[in-house]
Image (tube, rainbow, N blue to C red; front, side, top):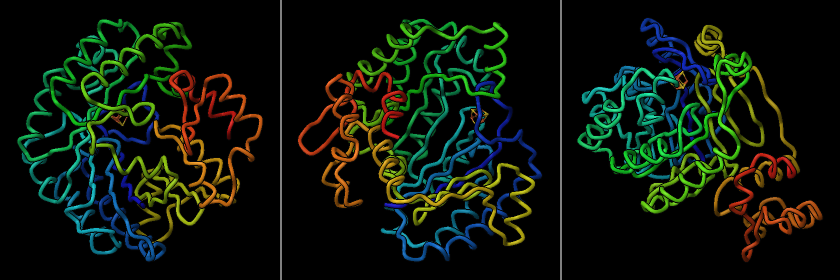
Length: 378
Ligand code: SF4
Protein backbone atom coordinates (compact mmCIF):
# COMPACT_ATOMS: atom_id res chain seq x y z
CA UNK A 1 0.00 0.00 0.00
CA UNK A 2 1.10 3.57 -0.65
CA UNK A 3 -0.82 6.83 -0.57
CA UNK A 4 -0.68 10.39 -1.85
CA UNK A 5 -1.76 13.24 0.43
CA UNK A 6 -2.51 16.74 -0.88
CA UNK A 7 -2.80 19.61 1.61
CA UNK A 8 -5.14 22.52 0.84
CA UNK A 9 -4.25 25.07 3.54
CA UNK A 10 -7.18 27.49 3.26
CA UNK A 11 -10.05 28.06 5.68
CA UNK A 12 -12.84 30.62 6.09
CA UNK A 13 -11.42 31.46 9.52
CA UNK A 14 -9.12 29.90 12.08
CA UNK A 15 -10.94 27.70 14.60
CA UNK A 16 -9.70 28.41 18.15
CA UNK A 17 -8.56 24.83 18.84
CA UNK A 18 -6.84 24.15 15.51
CA UNK A 19 -3.11 23.69 15.06
CA UNK A 20 -3.18 22.48 11.45
CA UNK A 21 -1.45 24.60 8.85
CA UNK A 22 -4.22 26.79 7.47
CA UNK A 23 -4.53 30.36 6.24
CA UNK A 24 -7.61 32.51 6.10
CA UNK A 25 -8.76 32.29 2.49
CA UNK A 26 -7.70 34.74 -0.15
CA UNK A 27 -9.22 33.56 -3.40
CA UNK A 28 -6.31 35.08 -5.33
CA UNK A 29 -3.99 32.46 -3.76
CA UNK A 30 -5.90 29.49 -5.18
CA UNK A 31 -4.53 29.58 -8.73
CA UNK A 32 -0.86 29.98 -7.76
CA UNK A 33 -1.21 27.33 -5.09
CA UNK A 34 -2.69 24.88 -7.62
CA UNK A 35 0.23 25.47 -9.98
CA UNK A 36 2.73 25.06 -7.13
CA UNK A 37 1.20 21.71 -6.05
CA UNK A 38 1.16 20.54 -9.68
CA UNK A 39 4.83 21.54 -10.05
CA UNK A 40 5.69 19.69 -6.85
CA UNK A 41 3.82 16.58 -8.09
CA UNK A 42 5.89 16.65 -11.31
CA UNK A 43 9.11 17.02 -9.32
CA UNK A 44 8.31 14.26 -6.83
CA UNK A 45 6.86 11.59 -9.13
CA UNK A 46 10.34 10.70 -10.42
CA UNK A 47 11.45 9.57 -6.92
CA UNK A 48 8.66 7.04 -6.57
CA UNK A 49 8.54 5.45 -10.01
CA UNK A 50 8.68 1.95 -8.53
CA UNK A 51 5.73 2.52 -6.16
CA UNK A 52 2.13 1.79 -7.00
CA UNK A 53 -0.30 4.04 -5.14
CA UNK A 54 -3.70 2.89 -3.88
CA UNK A 55 -5.19 5.96 -2.24
CA UNK A 56 -5.32 9.74 -2.61
CA UNK A 57 -6.43 12.00 0.24
CA UNK A 58 -7.12 15.72 -0.20
CA UNK A 59 -7.12 17.26 3.27
CA UNK A 60 -6.77 20.63 4.87
CA UNK A 61 -7.55 23.26 5.73
CA UNK A 62 -10.86 23.20 3.95
CA UNK A 63 -10.59 21.60 0.50
CA UNK A 64 -14.27 22.33 -0.18
CA UNK A 65 -13.35 26.03 -0.41
CA UNK A 66 -11.14 25.21 -3.36
CA UNK A 67 -12.85 25.52 -6.78
CA UNK A 68 -13.60 22.10 -8.29
CA UNK A 69 -11.74 23.10 -11.50
CA UNK A 70 -8.53 23.50 -9.48
CA UNK A 71 -9.07 20.17 -7.70
CA UNK A 72 -9.37 18.74 -11.24
CA UNK A 73 -6.06 20.32 -12.30
CA UNK A 74 -4.21 18.76 -9.34
CA UNK A 75 -5.84 15.35 -9.71
CA UNK A 76 -5.09 15.24 -13.44
CA UNK A 77 -1.41 15.98 -12.84
CA UNK A 78 -1.31 13.16 -10.31
CA UNK A 79 -3.30 10.75 -12.46
CA UNK A 80 -0.93 11.02 -15.42
CA UNK A 81 2.37 11.12 -13.54
CA UNK A 82 2.17 8.57 -10.70
CA UNK A 83 1.67 4.80 -10.97
CA UNK A 84 -1.41 3.25 -9.47
CA UNK A 85 -2.16 -0.29 -8.36
CA UNK A 86 -5.58 -0.28 -10.01
CA UNK A 87 -7.75 1.73 -12.36
CA UNK A 88 -8.56 5.31 -11.33
CA UNK A 89 -12.20 4.48 -10.55
CA UNK A 90 -11.15 1.71 -8.13
CA UNK A 91 -8.76 3.86 -6.07
CA UNK A 92 -9.92 5.31 -2.77
CA UNK A 93 -9.93 9.07 -3.37
CA UNK A 94 -11.05 11.11 -0.36
CA UNK A 95 -11.66 14.81 0.08
CA UNK A 96 -12.41 16.79 3.24
CA UNK A 97 -15.27 19.26 3.23
CA UNK A 98 -16.95 21.62 5.66
CA UNK A 99 -20.72 22.07 5.68
CA UNK A 100 -20.52 25.86 5.27
CA UNK A 101 -18.55 25.75 2.03
CA UNK A 102 -20.23 23.09 -0.08
CA UNK A 103 -22.53 23.31 -3.04
CA UNK A 104 -24.28 20.51 -4.95
CA UNK A 105 -22.34 21.56 -8.10
CA UNK A 106 -18.97 21.26 -6.34
CA UNK A 107 -19.91 17.83 -4.98
CA UNK A 108 -21.11 16.57 -8.35
CA UNK A 109 -17.98 17.82 -10.09
CA UNK A 110 -15.51 16.30 -7.63
CA UNK A 111 -17.49 13.03 -7.70
CA UNK A 112 -17.14 13.00 -11.51
CA UNK A 113 -13.37 13.50 -11.12
CA UNK A 114 -13.23 10.14 -9.33
CA UNK A 115 -13.39 11.34 -5.73
CA UNK A 116 -15.42 8.61 -4.02
CA UNK A 117 -15.07 9.32 -0.30
CA UNK A 118 -16.17 12.51 1.43
CA UNK A 119 -15.08 13.45 4.94
CA UNK A 120 -17.34 16.10 6.46
CA UNK A 121 -16.21 18.26 9.39
CA UNK A 122 -19.53 18.37 11.29
CA UNK A 123 -17.88 18.24 14.77
CA UNK A 124 -21.06 18.54 16.84
CA UNK A 125 -24.84 18.49 16.48
CA UNK A 126 -25.63 21.06 19.14
CA UNK A 127 -25.86 24.80 18.64
CA UNK A 128 -23.98 25.43 21.88
CA UNK A 129 -21.10 23.08 20.90
CA UNK A 130 -20.73 24.62 17.44
CA UNK A 131 -20.72 28.09 19.00
CA UNK A 132 -17.99 27.11 21.44
CA UNK A 133 -15.92 25.65 18.59
CA UNK A 134 -16.69 28.82 16.56
CA UNK A 135 -17.64 26.73 13.58
CA UNK A 136 -19.25 28.77 10.81
CA UNK A 137 -21.99 26.19 10.09
CA UNK A 138 -25.22 25.12 11.78
CA UNK A 139 -26.51 21.69 12.78
CA UNK A 140 -28.93 21.85 9.84
CA UNK A 141 -26.08 22.68 7.40
CA UNK A 142 -24.36 19.40 8.32
CA UNK A 143 -27.55 17.35 7.97
CA UNK A 144 -28.26 18.91 4.56
CA UNK A 145 -24.65 18.47 3.41
CA UNK A 146 -24.78 14.75 4.10
CA UNK A 147 -28.03 14.49 2.19
CA UNK A 148 -26.77 16.38 -0.89
CA UNK A 149 -23.53 14.38 -0.82
CA UNK A 150 -25.57 11.20 -1.02
CA UNK A 151 -27.61 12.68 -3.90
CA UNK A 152 -24.35 13.54 -5.67
CA UNK A 153 -23.42 9.85 -5.65
CA UNK A 154 -21.11 9.56 -2.62
CA UNK A 155 -21.53 6.08 -1.19
CA UNK A 156 -18.80 6.47 1.40
CA UNK A 157 -19.34 9.45 3.69
CA UNK A 158 -17.37 10.05 6.84
CA UNK A 159 -18.35 12.46 9.57
CA UNK A 160 -15.92 14.06 12.05
CA UNK A 161 -17.27 14.51 15.58
CA UNK A 162 -15.68 15.92 18.71
CA UNK A 163 -16.39 15.23 22.34
CA UNK A 164 -15.11 16.79 25.53
CA UNK A 165 -16.23 20.25 24.40
CA UNK A 166 -16.39 22.49 27.51
CA UNK A 167 -20.02 22.70 28.63
CA UNK A 168 -20.98 19.46 26.86
CA UNK A 169 -22.79 16.89 29.03
CA UNK A 170 -22.99 13.14 28.50
CA UNK A 171 -26.58 13.53 27.38
CA UNK A 172 -25.54 16.29 24.89
CA UNK A 173 -23.04 13.84 23.41
CA UNK A 174 -25.69 11.13 23.29
CA UNK A 175 -27.99 13.42 21.29
CA UNK A 176 -25.13 14.29 18.93
CA UNK A 177 -24.36 10.61 18.38
CA UNK A 178 -28.04 9.84 17.76
CA UNK A 179 -28.32 12.61 15.16
CA UNK A 180 -25.02 11.61 13.55
CA UNK A 181 -26.16 8.01 13.20
CA UNK A 182 -29.57 9.03 11.89
CA UNK A 183 -27.71 10.65 8.96
CA UNK A 184 -26.57 7.15 7.93
CA UNK A 185 -22.90 7.88 7.31
CA UNK A 186 -20.65 4.90 6.64
CA UNK A 187 -17.78 6.18 8.78
CA UNK A 188 -17.47 8.33 11.91
CA UNK A 189 -14.27 9.77 13.36
CA UNK A 190 -14.92 10.69 16.98
CA UNK A 191 -12.10 12.69 18.56
CA UNK A 192 -11.62 14.12 22.00
CA UNK A 193 -11.11 17.89 21.84
CA UNK A 194 -7.51 18.41 22.88
CA UNK A 195 -5.80 21.63 23.86
CA UNK A 196 -2.94 22.18 21.41
CA UNK A 197 -0.15 24.53 22.51
CA UNK A 198 -0.15 27.90 20.80
CA UNK A 199 -3.87 27.88 19.95
CA UNK A 200 -6.45 30.38 21.11
CA UNK A 201 -8.08 27.61 23.13
CA UNK A 202 -4.80 27.00 24.97
CA UNK A 203 -4.63 30.70 25.89
CA UNK A 204 -8.22 30.66 27.16
CA UNK A 205 -7.57 27.53 29.25
CA UNK A 206 -4.36 29.02 30.64
CA UNK A 207 -6.11 32.24 31.62
CA UNK A 208 -8.88 30.30 33.41
CA UNK A 209 -11.50 31.56 30.98
CA UNK A 210 -12.25 27.99 29.83
CA UNK A 211 -12.28 24.86 31.97
CA UNK A 212 -11.76 21.58 30.17
CA UNK A 213 -13.81 18.51 31.22
CA UNK A 214 -12.52 16.19 33.93
CA UNK A 215 -10.86 12.85 33.20
CA UNK A 216 -13.89 11.04 34.64
CA UNK A 217 -16.28 12.86 32.34
CA UNK A 218 -14.05 12.19 29.33
CA UNK A 219 -13.88 8.54 30.22
CA UNK A 220 -17.68 8.33 30.48
CA UNK A 221 -17.99 10.04 27.09
CA UNK A 222 -15.48 7.67 25.49
CA UNK A 223 -17.41 4.67 26.83
CA UNK A 224 -20.65 6.12 25.52
CA UNK A 225 -19.27 6.92 22.04
CA UNK A 226 -17.74 3.46 21.63
CA UNK A 227 -20.85 1.62 22.85
CA UNK A 228 -23.30 3.76 20.88
CA UNK A 229 -21.42 3.67 17.58
CA UNK A 230 -20.83 -0.07 17.86
CA UNK A 231 -24.55 -0.58 18.58
CA UNK A 232 -25.26 1.14 15.24
CA UNK A 233 -23.00 -1.27 13.35
CA UNK A 234 -20.06 1.16 13.15
CA UNK A 235 -17.18 -1.03 14.23
CA UNK A 236 -14.25 0.60 15.96
CA UNK A 237 -11.09 -0.08 13.95
CA UNK A 238 -8.81 2.61 15.42
CA UNK A 239 -8.83 4.59 18.67
CA UNK A 240 -10.99 7.36 17.17
CA UNK A 241 -12.42 5.73 14.04
CA UNK A 242 -15.55 3.66 13.44
CA UNK A 243 -16.90 2.26 10.18
CA UNK A 244 -19.40 -0.03 8.57
CA UNK A 245 -17.63 -3.05 7.16
CA UNK A 246 -15.71 -2.19 3.99
CA UNK A 247 -15.76 1.58 4.69
CA UNK A 248 -12.59 1.85 6.81
CA UNK A 249 -10.33 4.62 5.49
CA UNK A 250 -7.66 2.75 3.52
CA UNK A 251 -5.51 5.85 3.28
CA UNK A 252 -5.26 6.12 7.06
CA UNK A 253 -4.85 2.35 7.46
CA UNK A 254 -1.70 2.75 5.37
CA UNK A 255 -0.40 5.40 7.82
CA UNK A 256 -1.08 3.11 10.75
CA UNK A 257 0.68 0.25 8.96
CA UNK A 258 3.65 2.65 8.63
CA UNK A 259 3.35 2.38 4.86
CA UNK A 260 4.83 4.84 2.39
CA UNK A 261 3.16 8.08 1.35
CA UNK A 262 3.95 11.20 -0.63
CA UNK A 263 2.68 14.48 0.83
CA UNK A 264 2.18 17.39 -1.55
CA UNK A 265 1.50 20.97 -0.52
CA UNK A 266 2.32 23.36 2.23
CA UNK A 267 3.41 21.52 5.46
CA UNK A 268 2.66 18.09 3.95
CA UNK A 269 4.62 15.17 5.39
CA UNK A 270 6.08 12.35 3.26
CA UNK A 271 7.48 9.00 4.25
CA UNK A 272 9.32 7.35 1.41
CA UNK A 273 12.22 4.87 1.40
CA UNK A 274 12.69 5.25 5.18
CA UNK A 275 12.98 9.06 4.96
CA UNK A 276 10.42 11.26 6.62
CA UNK A 277 10.26 14.82 5.33
CA UNK A 278 8.01 17.78 5.86
CA UNK A 279 7.36 20.71 3.54
CA UNK A 280 7.61 24.25 4.76
CA UNK A 281 4.47 25.46 6.57
CA UNK A 282 4.88 28.93 5.05
CA UNK A 283 2.48 29.41 2.16
CA UNK A 284 4.68 32.04 0.49
CA UNK A 285 7.84 29.92 0.80
CA UNK A 286 6.03 26.81 -0.42
CA UNK A 287 4.68 28.54 -3.53
CA UNK A 288 8.10 30.04 -4.32
CA UNK A 289 10.08 26.84 -3.80
CA UNK A 290 7.66 24.55 -5.64
CA UNK A 291 7.19 26.98 -8.53
CA UNK A 292 10.97 27.26 -8.97
CA UNK A 293 11.19 23.46 -9.22
CA UNK A 294 12.94 23.11 -5.85
CA UNK A 295 12.06 20.66 -3.11
CA UNK A 296 9.77 22.38 -0.58
CA UNK A 297 10.98 20.13 2.26
CA UNK A 298 12.54 22.04 5.14
CA UNK A 299 12.86 19.05 7.45
CA UNK A 300 13.91 15.49 6.78
CA UNK A 301 15.17 12.57 8.81
CA UNK A 302 16.30 9.13 7.87
CA UNK A 303 14.93 6.37 10.08
CA UNK A 304 17.10 3.34 10.81
CA UNK A 305 15.61 -0.16 11.04
CA UNK A 306 15.05 0.03 14.80
CA UNK A 307 13.30 3.38 14.58
CA UNK A 308 11.11 2.01 11.77
CA UNK A 309 10.25 -1.06 13.84
CA UNK A 310 9.28 1.05 16.87
CA UNK A 311 7.13 3.36 14.73
CA UNK A 312 5.44 0.44 13.03
CA UNK A 313 4.55 -1.04 16.44
CA UNK A 314 3.30 2.23 17.93
CA UNK A 315 1.23 3.15 14.86
CA UNK A 316 -0.13 -0.40 14.43
CA UNK A 317 -1.24 -0.52 18.05
CA UNK A 318 -3.58 2.40 17.41
CA UNK A 319 -5.71 0.01 15.37
CA UNK A 320 -7.99 -2.55 16.99
CA UNK A 321 -6.30 -5.35 15.02
CA UNK A 322 -2.97 -4.38 16.56
CA UNK A 323 0.26 -5.77 15.13
CA UNK A 324 1.25 -9.20 13.88
CA UNK A 325 4.34 -10.59 15.60
CA UNK A 326 5.26 -12.80 12.65
CA UNK A 327 4.52 -9.97 10.19
CA UNK A 328 7.04 -7.77 12.00
CA UNK A 329 9.62 -10.58 11.99
CA UNK A 330 9.13 -10.85 8.24
CA UNK A 331 9.43 -7.09 7.71
CA UNK A 332 12.24 -6.26 10.16
CA UNK A 333 13.76 -9.65 11.07
CA UNK A 334 13.00 -8.96 14.74
CA UNK A 335 10.66 -10.51 17.30
CA UNK A 336 9.00 -7.67 19.24
CA UNK A 337 8.49 -9.89 22.30
CA UNK A 338 12.26 -10.23 22.57
CA UNK A 339 12.91 -6.64 21.48
CA UNK A 340 10.67 -5.09 24.16
CA UNK A 341 11.13 -7.94 26.67
CA UNK A 342 9.86 -7.08 30.17
CA UNK A 343 8.32 -3.79 29.10
CA UNK A 344 5.84 -5.57 26.86
CA UNK A 345 5.22 -8.35 29.40
CA UNK A 346 4.39 -5.79 32.09
CA UNK A 347 1.90 -4.00 29.83
CA UNK A 348 0.18 -7.30 29.04
CA UNK A 349 0.15 -8.39 32.70
CA UNK A 350 -1.28 -5.03 33.77
CA UNK A 351 -4.13 -5.51 31.28
CA UNK A 352 -3.21 -2.61 28.97
CA UNK A 353 -2.38 -4.91 26.07
CA UNK A 354 -3.63 -8.30 24.95
CA UNK A 355 -2.11 -11.13 23.01
CA UNK A 356 -4.44 -13.00 20.69
CA UNK A 357 -2.70 -15.67 18.66
CA UNK A 358 -0.03 -14.01 16.56
CA UNK A 359 -1.33 -10.51 17.24
CA UNK A 360 -0.86 -7.99 20.03
CA UNK A 361 -3.23 -5.08 20.53
CA UNK A 362 -4.27 -2.51 23.10
CA UNK A 363 -7.04 -3.64 25.44
CA UNK A 364 -10.03 -1.39 26.08
CA UNK A 365 -8.30 -0.22 29.26
CA UNK A 366 -5.10 0.43 27.27
CA UNK A 367 -6.95 2.47 24.62
CA UNK A 368 -8.18 4.84 27.35
CA UNK A 369 -4.61 5.87 28.11
CA UNK A 370 -3.18 5.01 24.72
CA UNK A 371 -0.63 7.82 24.63
CA UNK A 372 0.94 6.76 27.95
CA UNK A 373 0.96 3.07 27.00
CA UNK A 374 2.44 3.71 23.56
CA UNK A 375 5.08 6.04 24.98
CA UNK A 376 6.49 2.96 26.77
CA UNK A 377 7.20 1.43 23.39
CA UNK A 378 8.71 4.40 21.53
S1 SF4 B 1 -11.79 24.34 9.47
FE1 SF4 B 1 -10.45 22.65 10.16
S2 SF4 B 1 -8.42 23.11 9.34
FE2 SF4 B 1 -9.67 24.99 9.20
S3 SF4 B 1 -9.17 26.15 11.03
FE3 SF4 B 1 -11.02 24.95 11.48
S4 SF4 B 1 -10.26 23.00 12.35
FE4 SF4 B 1 -8.51 24.03 11.37
